[in-house]
Image (spheres, one colour):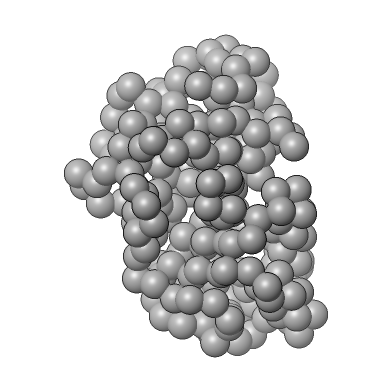
Length: 229
């Protein structure tokens, strides 16, 4: 399994190429912004039909990460569903697969702006969650320490890296995870909102078969081959 080990607030977190994080000491897989049911929500609200495969692709990615890490727990950092109705509108096969992934695991749903309440699925629901030195919430807060969040869907491109990719942004105080779900858009990592939150010195981890650690703001060619802090 290709990962980058990241020391953070006295803990070691492993960044996976999928955009997930694994916290070995807590046997916990951390993902953000799955946006399950996105095509169903778009069809319902706009009448635009999209191939209804994004939920299945996201769940297959999640199943692969759980198999690779053996994680006994999962923490979803909000916007797990594209809206509250999307949770109820899941294809029965997709819902059954999701429930099978939840069963036997400590599963935590953190509320997001798209899904600000329980979704009628197993697991614990939280407005935000504190575990050891780390705080988990959907949207980053100014001045936070040891914070992991999502919401912004950061993406970054470097020459020779196969175009723009979702990325994890981090500094000594916080991490902002990429969107884990298929069909999710993204905000450039250089956007003012993200630069204000991350500042400098900081790093980005580009997703892909082999996750790539680069300085942030990124410099062309920086970080090639680095796999560990």
